[in-house]
Length: 202
Image 1 (tube, rainbow, N blue to C red):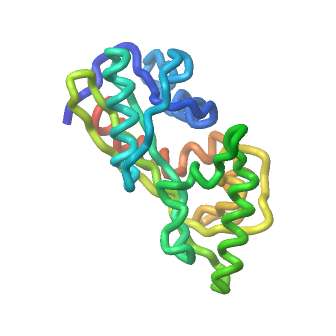
Image 2 (cartoon, rainbow, N blue to C red; image 1 turned 180 degrees about the horizontal axis):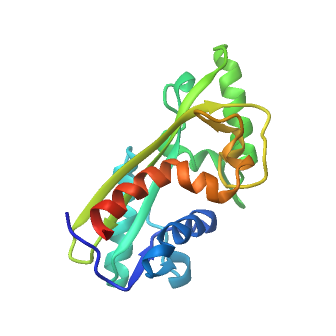
């Protein structure tokens, strides 16, 4: 396992919510964190069918373009009643001509669940795969997940993405109803992050 020994880390995302979450998680390590958007990096095409495959594409593209170690996250929600969909296509379900619309995506998800006729609870999980890549082509991979269930209607104004319809196991509120500090302690990304920290930062 290669240790991170730099002072600056590029986070290969244009998603401001995801970037803020990662900055919070990295705050204790005194590392300067910058986002791909800050460096005007293009978003590479995500052509893989797994979280790890797409995370690798993003991390290596950013590391090669900047000469900095780059951390990427590919994440999404897998819903058992939809045979694991939307999975790696979670963000794609939100795409419109004018950007991502997650209210539309969550509505689409609920409509598809109703079409299945399968009863609640609609179990599933948020998955996050972190890849830390170096400019020399080396990388380390850290998968994380949070089990839970999909609820309807949407609840809460915090978080981002599908957070308003996901209740994590052991809780009665959605991710979007939790303070960000609480969500960041228990989320799929926190699970992957704990593995990243133990492997590369401690």
